[in-house]
Amino acid sequence: MSNRSLVMKGASWIALARIFVTLIGLASTLILARLLVPEDFGLVAIAGAVTMVIASITELSLAQALVQHDDPQDHHYDTAWTLNNTRSILLSVLIAASAHPVATAYGDPRLLTIMLFLAGTTLIDGLQSPRLIVFQRNLVFWQEFALSVTEKLAGFIAGVTAAIILENYWALILGGAAARIVRCIASYIFAPYRPRIGLRGYKELLSFSVWLTFSKTVQMINWRADPLILGAAIQPGALGQYSMSDNLAGMPIREGLGPIRQTLFPAFSRIKNDMPRLCAAYLRAQGLLCVLALPIGTGFAAVAEPAVRLMLGEAWIPAVPMIQALALIMAFEACEGYQPLAMALGRTKAMFGREMRAFAVRLPLLIAGMMVGWQVGGDFAIVMGAIAGRGVASLINVTWNMTLIQKMTGITLVRQVSVVIRPLIASAVMFVLLTYVLAPHLLGTSGDPDLAMLLLLVVAGIAVYVAALLVAWVASGRPSSAEAEAIRMLGSLRGMVVRKARPALGGTEGNGP
Image (cartoon, rainbow, N blue to C red):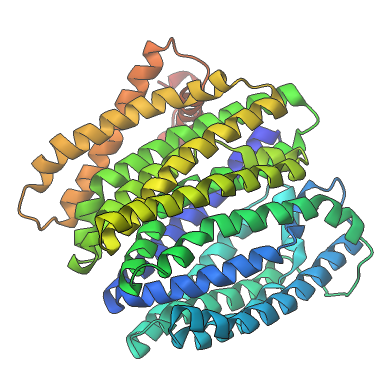
């Protein structure tokens, strides 16, 4: 089977998993948002951010090292398991040690018990079977579907049950713990492995992963700085609004593009020694990312107000402008694929440099935006200022990433930007029509949107985007691009359906349409 066929099959499995995971996650978010208050989400956001930053410092990126390795042997898996468990023990100790200082710094004793509990649950992660990575190396992702759905369902059941019984922030924490336990158990069911302590292959694995570890540490600090900095300046309720907005705005883009992004690193790794082929594959991938990310982000921004009012309730209405701005920012950020490309080429040291520069741009702009908001006055203004700073930083860093891709592959900046133009125009047309024409007509001005009308609005938005994109593609001379690839795939799918339908209809090869 060709590399492209494997990627498409793998992406299909991941897409199926993402659909189920998204539906479960959305249901969980909506139910918990009704049962809990914004302060609960803000409290857990602080503890989660601190935990993730500490986790990033000890991250070893051994899974990626095994994927990139030409031929991993048993001793490599033993080394990965040993190092992962050593890291989990160290991580647990560090989180526990930080519990009291964090609780003191934010003036909330509840953070102490939350972080001590999280310190204990981190031990579970190191116990997972390292052989799960074999599936990813071979671009086989059916087990990812089973694992993702199983762990998400376990977290959903545990979280909602705890919310009904306890009616507080512990529901969010217990749901996450249940998901970790179930994933660990399931990893041995799908990828059997007999744990053995060993360090024979540590040099090979760490030679690739050490710079990737540094890179991910800076990246995690960069992206988790928001709740930590905002939490020191605004009330937990306002932080909960921001945390929910960040989660909801990222969910459709994260889940919609996940199937593609998850296959890029192993797919690029298989052709890393054939640069012309790799460049062509990257441009196809970037085009597909843009064709999907831009309409998802702009479409969600357009329907955010009725969606929040209908699904979350009036208590979350202040989050609407946050969701709209963050959805547009995240859509733009998704329009390049520097990280999987650099990892496939083994440019992990360059990735670290990239993350350091991104951090140096993003953090000052985030703080500057908060200061502008503080001058205006109020928690809402501070949050929106931070989001504005985040948007400016994204514009700078995405442009920077594209210049780095040009240095690695020779793909010019103009060529990369040209991939974005048509989806951007089509998304802008969709946004304008949804916001100023379709939404007022379908939803009216009653302020009480119903689900049927909201779904109709989403379908109408998709139709407008597809039509606008096709018009832009034809006007550009029908270039070989993501649009052409999609049309070919639809043609192949139609042919497959027709061939399978003929025997059932009693037709012959000559009787087809």
